[in-house]
Amino acid sequence: MQIFGVDIGGSGIKGAPVDLDRGDLAQERHKVLTPHPATPEDVADSVAEVVGHFDWSGPVGITFPGVVTSGVTRTAANVDKGWIDTDARTLLGNKLSLPVTVLNDADAAGIAEMTFGAGRGRKGTVIMLTFGTGIGSAVFIDGQLVPNTELGHLELNGHDAEKHASTKAKEDEDLSWHHWAHRVQRYLTHVEMLFSPELFIIGGGVSRKADKFLPLIDHVRAEMIPAELQNNAGIVGAAMAAAGS
Image 1: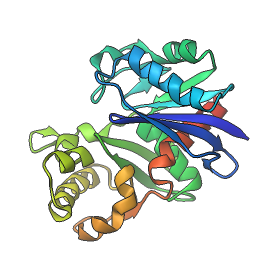
Image 2 (image 1 turned 135 degrees about the vertical axis):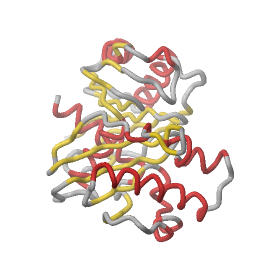
Image 3 (image 1 turned 30 degrees about the vertical axis):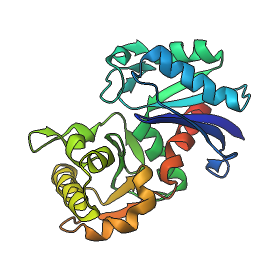
């Protein structure tokens, strides 16, 4: 069975048909740059471009980098503030003329990893963290998702943690892997103090380079492993959500 998944990020919008039996992309993904400003209408046009690239006609799952409740986007940390309280499901559904499911991007990635990837079969408290333009989070208790946790906005050094420890912060400040790993470590120990997880799954595009920074992190008791689906997890999870809606 194939369902289309789209992952809206602060820097790029990517999508592909997903083989839900294998939990992997059925075709090579297509990516476009996120428009700036990332207004609802402009982003919807970009999503339509990605979906249209495959001439897709069927249900579409779409992730959003913020809180999503019943298809309505409630926050917009890394996209245009016009998204706040937008009925994204209706907007995107009308743009595509297709059935649409919308959910938080990190929640989608976490669902995919817990089903097909690094969290498969794991019980207890598992926290998936996606490092990119911001820091997304997905918290699972015995495999059940606690939606819209947004742990990237925990305060660290007087600011949102993602302003200090995201991949964007590393790039903007030209940090070495060692320096950035120290920031990530401080963030992880803070999250661990609050939630005491058994496992951290480290996702986002930087998960492809986990060997460059995970070995540099200590003082974290929980097991830390990179996401197996890497930066495709959001696309796969979006498709899974659309299939289950």
